[in-house]
Structure formats: C-alpha cells, structure tokens
Image 1: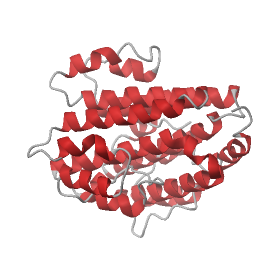
Image 2 (image 1 turned 180 degrees about the vertical axis):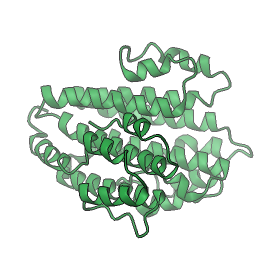
Image 3 (image 1 turned 90 degrees about the vertical axis):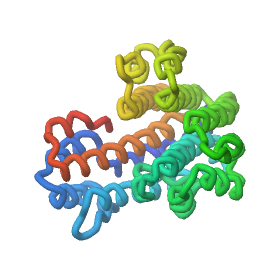
Image 4 (image 1 turned 135 degrees about the vertical axis):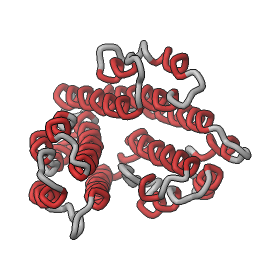
Length: 307
C-alpha cells in the first residue's frame, strides 16, 4: 500500500487548492443578500454558475455539480485503483438511497430529495434524478434492482411491503453497506479503515433516530469513537440528524487530516479531499439558504466546518 497512492494524493492536494476553504466561506456567510453571495462565490470558485437571478436552490445545484465534476476528475485519476475507493462511492450511494426512500415515503418534491447528493460511478446524475422522483420506496428499490446496484437486494423485501417501515429499510441498508465497506477496509490502509468506521457509526446513528426507542438504539453507538465530535453528538440529550451529520463530517475531517499528514503516500490525502468536498457542499447550501432567510450572519459563519 505504501506509495501506491502517491500520485493521486499529490493531485488531490492540488485539486484541494480549488476548494473555497473555511476562511472564505465564513466571509461569504456574511453576504448582504443572495445576489452578493452568488457574485462572491463565482469569484472564489469560477466553475460555479448559480444562474441569473441566483436563488438558494440554484446556488446549491451549482455547488453540487461542481463537487460532482471534481469528484469525477479524481476518480478518473485513480484509474484501475478506483475500486479501492468503493466505500467512498457506497457512502455517497447510501446517502442518495436514504434520501430517495425518505423522500418517497414523505412525498417530498424531487428537487428537495436531491439536495446535497453527489453522483458516483454507480449512481450518476441521471440515475439520481430517476431514483429521487420515484413515488414509493418500492419503486426506488425496484429501479435500483433493475440497475443491479449492489445495495438493492438489502431493501427489496421490506420496500415491497404494503406499508414499508423506514427504520427497517434503513437498518437493512446500513447492514449491507457495513458488510461491503468492512470487507474493502481490510484491504486498505488505516485512513480507509477510519473512514469506514466513522461512516458506519454515523449511518447507524441517523437510522436510530427513526427507531421506536431511539435512546435504546443509540446506546451501543455511544461507546464508539470517544473524544470525537461524533461521539459527543451521540451523547447529547436529544441527538438530531443535523447535529449527527455535522459531527460526522468534523470527525472525518480530523481523522483524514491526520492521516494525510502522517501517511502522505497513502489514501489519507485522497480521502481528506473527498471529505473536504462533502463539507464544502454542506457549507455552501447552508449559507445560501441562511442568507436567503436572513439568518444571523455570525451564526452562519460559526456554522462553517470546512477547514
């Protein structure tokens, strides 16, 4: 493994220079209005094209497409080594499938279901559009099965029930992801193993919020990842999805920053870029909607997690 990722890691570090970065995002969070935010974003990241006139939804979409393009570039650079990154692709697909299932169950508009989702080799842009406009969880599962997606078999039986249980669906999805990811992690380095461990805990925690007894479902997870933002979030009196997702990203950033520094020839720099990409997408969307709703600018700036 030593040295196998040196060239991709170097390119990842170069590509990281095109990210907006935490300091600039905190400045953007103080924008007067959406128009000025959009102009400042384009100056910071010329690839972004938020539309005219810009809206929070258009800014989020532009940010998502930019993230997808950068993701694709780095995957292309990986070449024949890309299968080693299966847990990264699976995590994004898990996130997309979860959004599609929840959106179908709740009748959420398709555009809202796609918020924050990044295309992958398994679920490209068109595939994301298709699964996030399906009317029922059964239709989502059937489409994934037709595409032979590796996570599809886990949810087919429950999704086909007359009244599928979201907790059961997402639990099955978590188990399928964990089995694949842990198998891949055994072939990877410490950076990949940490990525998988943090991801599994955060996925199960988000699913636990749907459990009939959330506290009981969270109990075994609270002993995991002590002294990390995610561990502290799980010990909160009333854990919330937004807090868990933020803490998960913060924990990933800390772990992969350390690996990138200590193991520069391994997967750390590559995974650190992916996690920074995900954090920036989250920050831009949050800032865009916050500015549009005239949220306190100091609060928006304090909420930025990108380094």
